Amino acid sequence: MPVSEAKTSSGRQTGVQRGKSAATRAALIAAARSCFAEAGYHATGTHNLVSLTSVSRGALYYHFGDKFDIFEAVFLEIDEELNRAARNAVTQMSNDTWLQLVTALATYLRLRAESREAGRILLIDGPAVFGWERWRELQSGALEGMAITLGMLMDQGIIGRQPPEPLARLIFAATNEAALAIAHAADPEAALVAHTHSLLTLVQGLRLTPEPVNRFGGSLER
Image 1 (cartoon, helix red, strand yellow):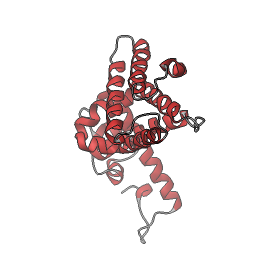
Image 2: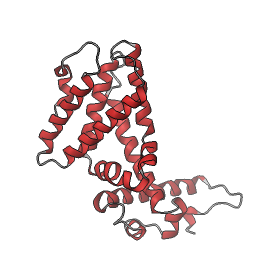
Image 3: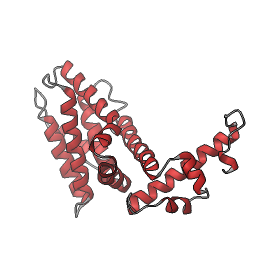
C-alpha cells in the first residue's frame, strides 16, 4: 500500500496522510469524470484511470471498491454541482417562490444541456449503470427540494393543492428529456431557448392565476 494511503498503528491517519489521501481521491475522480464523459462507463477500465493519474492501482481500490463505486462518486459530484448552481441562481429571490422555481429550472436545464459530463454520465449512462430505482434515489435531494418548493407554492395559493412529490417527479422528468433533446439537437442554442420556453410554459399551467412566461424572459436568454 502506498505510503500516502497508509494508516497509523492506531488505525487513524495523520493530518498529512489525510491531505494526501484527499488529493488522491480528487485526482481519481477528476480522471474518471474525463473518461466517463468521453468514452462512457462501459468503455472505461480502471487501467484508464490509473494511467491518467500518478497513483497506483492499489490506491484506486483503497478509495473505491470498483469501477461502479467511482462512477457513483463522479455522478454525485456532478449532480451536486448542478444543484448548487441552480440554488445559487435564486439566492436573491427569497421573497418570490414562483420566480425561484422557474429560474432554478431554467438554470438547471441549461447546465444539464450544455455539460457533456452531465449529459453522458447523469442522463445516459446513469440509468443504465444504476438501474432506474437507484438512479432516482441518487437524485432524491433535487426531487425533495422541488417538492418542498411546490408545497410552498400550494401554501401560498399560487398553484392548486395536490401531492407535491409526483408533480416534482414529472417536472424533473420533463427537464431531463429537454436536456437530452438540446444536447442532441443540430442547433443546441436554438433548442435551448425553445425547450426552456416550453418547459416554463408547461410549469406555468400549474398556476391558479396565469402569468405570462415573458415575465421570466431573463431565464430564456443566454
